[in-house]
Each structure stands twice: as C-alpha cells, then as structure tokens.
Length: 233
Length: 233
DNA sequence: AACGGCCCATTTGTATACAATTTGAAAAAC
DNA sequence: GTTTTTCAAATTGTATACAAATGGGCCGTT
Image (cartoon, each protein chain N blue to C red):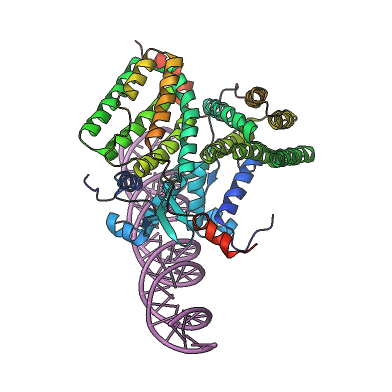
C-alpha cells in the first residue's frame, strides 16, 4: 500500500482499477487529469498514458475533449462478455487439461486458497482480482499467449461488471467451483473440466442482477411511447 | 492517399500498419520518433500515442528507453495466433449463421469482390487488409462486440505474420474460400460453415513457411553447442 | 420570468523544453 | 595491440507551456 517515490505507470493503473473494484470509484465518475496528477504526484503525460490504457481495456471511457469517466457497461454488453468468455475458456480449459503439470496444479490450488482467504476476510476487491488471476493463470497453463492476453482483457471487463452488478453483501461466486475445476484439470478430465467451466461462468453471470433495466442512457427508448403519441400517424 | 493537413492519430496508425503490410517496413526496423514526426508533420506526443497503440496490438515492440521496432513474431507465436483464431472464429461463424440477414450477406459478397479486385491488381497489402476486414465483419454480424474487438487484434497480428512469412509472389489465400463461406452462412448451414472456416484457417497457416527456422534472435540457442563446449562439465 | 447569446473559467489536446538514458567511438591505461 | 574508461551525440522519458474546446453563469432582450 505504500506509495513509491516515483509511481510507475502500471502501479497507477492498478490503483485506479483497484479503486473501481472496491467501488470507491463508481461508474460515470469523472476522472479529471489534474486531480489524478496531484494524487499520484506525476505529470499529465503519465496520467494520460494510464487513461489511454484503461480505455483500451474498456475500463474507462475516453470521450474526446470531454475527459475520462469510469465505464458503465450495459447489461447487454456484460452478457456478450460472458458469452465470449464461455467460448474462449472452453478452449483454454481443454488445453489446460492436456498441459497441466503437478506444480501448475499446486500453483492453482495456492491461488484458490488465497481467494478463499480474501472472501473470509471480507476483502471483496481482492477476491475479485484473485478470481480473475485464477482464470488468467489457466490460460497461461494452456500455453497460448495471445489467447491468454485476450482473456486478460475480458477478465478486466468482467471484474468491472461484477463490481457494478453484484448486489452488495451477496456472495459473488460459488466457493468451490475453482476447487472442483482444479481437481478435474489435474485429472486431465477434459469433458468434465469443460462442463464445470461452462456452468461456473453461467452461474457467475446469473448471480449478477442483469435483469433490472438500467435507468440511464437512451431517452428515446425510455420515452418511446411519448414519441409515438407525438407523431400522429 | 493524400495527406490531410492535420493527420489524425488513426490515420497515422493505418499508414504505418499499411507500410508494414507492404513490406516497406520489415521486422526489427527501428521506428525513430523524430523521423516519424518529420514524416507526418506532428509532434512526438501524437507519434508516441500511435506507437503505444501499435505496441498494444503487438504490431510493434516498445523497448523501454530503446525505442520502437517492427514486431517480429516467432513461428511458435504465429501458430498460437492461428490456434486462437480457430477457436474464436468457430464460435463467431456459428453465431453469424444464425444472425446473418440478406443485406449482411450482400455486404460480405461486396467485400469478397473487392478483395478479388486487389488480388487481380497485384495490390498485396490491400488484399491482406480486406481479407482481415472480412473476418472482422463476420464478427460484427455475429453481434458480439467484445469478441469482435478481440478478433480485430488477432487479425492485425495475422496480417503482420502474413506479410512476414508468405513467400513473395506466392498466392496468399485460396481465392474462393470466402465465397464458399458466404454461401454456407447465407444458407444458415452451421456445421458446413464451421468446417469451411476451420479448413480455411488451417490452409492459411499451412501456406506460411513457418517450417524454416528463424535466423535471428536467441543467440544462446543458436550457439548452444559453443556454450556447452566452453563449459567443461 | 423565460429564452438566447456572450464571455470567462476550467479542462482537454498538442507542442516544446528539459532531464535521463543509451550508444558508439575516441582516448587512456595496461 | 587489446581492453577499459570516458565523453559526447542522439534518443527516449517526463514535465510544462500554450492552444483549443467545452460548460456554466451572467446579462440583456422579449
């Protein structure tokens, strides 16, 4: 938690991302460059680089001439993200089954344990982050680096979605999904692993309250009836 | 081809990327910031933003304190990229079959026609770019935007790999693969579409000469025998 | 009092100045 | 003659200065 003398770009990235996961920065919050400069003690050059990277990861939205705000993914988009993850991770987990070595499994078990610790300690953002790291680590074991990089992006967006749509106080993930997944992978059981992963992702998506329609945004859609009434056909 | 008064960031991106596809910029070529500033008539601020984005798309490599060079993907990495594409596009094409409307098919046919025109005219980089756009458009029809964005990145890396590994003068892609794909998709024939896509990608990869070992790079590996001789066990 | 236009404060976008690092080569030491 | 040291030119990294744009409030008009 200590701030280095010269905060690096990636450290600032993590700090901002972490603040989002902690829900200290809520969607649509404006990120003024000058304020971030004062907070982190660097010039706008650095802050702008960080904001550009955050925007390419779809964590913040960069509106030309109007600054950066925390991204507010729509429910439709969150569903698409999970759909994409089901596709990618189906392939990843199958390959991980074939490539997984004993020490890989040990590392996965250690990550799952630390995730449990975070949940027990009530460290919500830590749990979200470790859960994401777990999936990224699976991709690393599968050994396809481009695929792992793509998943990293989807995981970042998923983390944002969880922070946004998980009802506060409610448990986020079925605790032992990851544990059962590790066992299946260590056994090299491809079909079982794929089934667990698929169910796991579907279950995660289901726990988000994506049903409640969003208030914001498209006023034309909200007042569609008004529009229809105003135009006597 | 005319240069705007104020070249936009994305225009400069496209120009550099196009020069790479045209093999006017070969791998490991250094991209000096000052030179690019003079060429495009903008300040280093803009150039550095473009280079950052190119590096995040893995088209150039950004070495800290040592500048940017055109990326030189290793054969292993190219194989991984194609493997990732097979996974992603298998899902994309299946979804595109369900979502494809008549005007979508018409657009695809138009893109395929323009690609043929480029091949006939000997416009190699144009053909590579349109071929990539075709696949990205399929993802757009499938209607999963995050997935489409991921594919866009893979397509960029594929284009770089093609420019690097296709033997000059040799035809790049089986001409009618895209046409047959359009027909199958327009018919809503999921299984056939998936088979064509899979074969298409495998065929593209096969046409690259990834067999010839790369000369450059890891001197430790190249001179492994020397190293062994120097260390008398 | 409501509407519209104007102006100024704030914020973002771009260019440039300055600091730090790398690199190559000349000079000094062995 | 070879190796090491040192130094200068070039290049990247960071901060800042300046230009352009946005947004909101003030004032005048109707």
